[in-house]
Image (cartoon, rainbow, N blue to C red; front, side, top):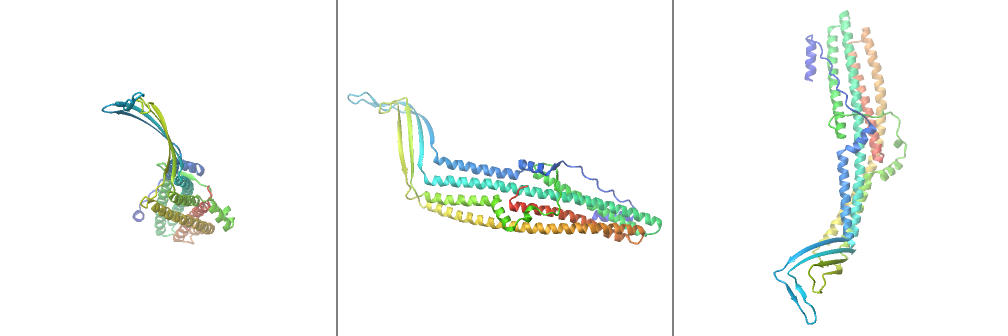
Length: 434
């Protein structure tokens, strides 16, 4: 505002108007498909989601280990302060305690009946499925948000173009006013008004270019770049998309079937149910078998230097201070919360579909009206310029008509972007990936 007032004061003092701001250098340009492919590779948000899925798969593998055999090897060297051996009648010496002994042992343990581990594994796998579905949901949201931002940047380009046309119109008005003043058919005030309007339009152009630079820089950051990027997006027309023609009930059913968010919540609920079963299974006994083989450089009391052992172990915790009951209560509470979250997600998806359809309809009507308004404003601006040249209209009439044309141009750009963004939001609500 201060710059605009300063420029107007300079014009009033007879100084020349400042030149229009120079256009910025052109940034790298990508098609939408190429940008989305790069987004899949470079998005830090997607990388974090994938890392969580990998972590969940690692947890599932850890849980599976409780049902698989374990093999251990152990070696030891023992040095005693004294050796001891006995010699029973009719037998050779039996070593009770060797002076030193080097021993190697190998042990295998096989879980046979571990009820809670069965459900722990199922719970971990359901959690991994939920994490993988969350990756798909994150990818859909990231791609939709990026494409919406790309359409917003395209609208900013249209605003820059409209501002450049407004600058040209204001400059032409200033030249026309100067010609009329020189011919004595207009007051010098018309020139001042026209030049002031030119400065205002140049200010609008500078702001529009700054907004465009910011939008392109935001796209570059989303792609993991440090500089701005221009993404070419398809033009948006008023024609309906397939989702608009589908019955609302069928569209809602399609959304409930496709949306990865609901699949993730459903998997979390199933994992929580498995957690409840695991908590109950902790009350049951566990059965395992183990076998070991050992060897030593000193003979054992049997007289042999190697041997083996097999055991069958039954473990049944009868009382643990209430830990298992507390674990069960925790699991049941988590399951109740997971079921509530699943239902909340289902209702949210249905609402998104309804809101998306309504927003697409409203945005389509706004685009139709903005197109008509722009045509009327263009006709009015052209008529005002002709009337001013003929001397039957004032510079204020031309400035007002140009204002309306500029507002119509920016409104049309905004309407196109909003319709494109509304369609993308509806497609995301239905679970369609573009």
